[in-house]
Image (cartoon, rainbow, N blue to C red):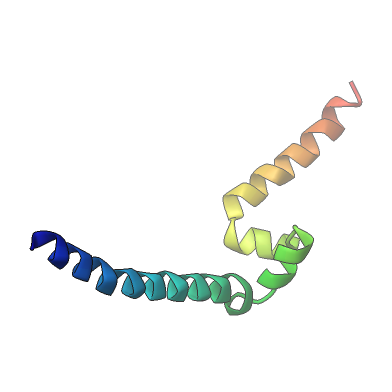
Length: 77
C-alpha cells in the first residue's frame, strides 16, 4: 500500500518539478541575453566592451589593465 502512495506522489511531483526547471531555464536565458543590454552580443562574440567590463566587474577590469601595462614596462629592460 505504501508503494502506491509513493508512486502517486512521484507521478504528481515529476511534472511539477519538470515545469519548474523549464521555467527557471527560460528565465535564465532571458536574463542572460535580453535583460542586460549588450549581453547577447557578448555571448555570441565571447567578449565585452571595456565600458561594460569596468561597470560590472571593476576590480577584474583594473587587474586586466595592470597586466596589459606590466609587459610593456618589462620588455624594455
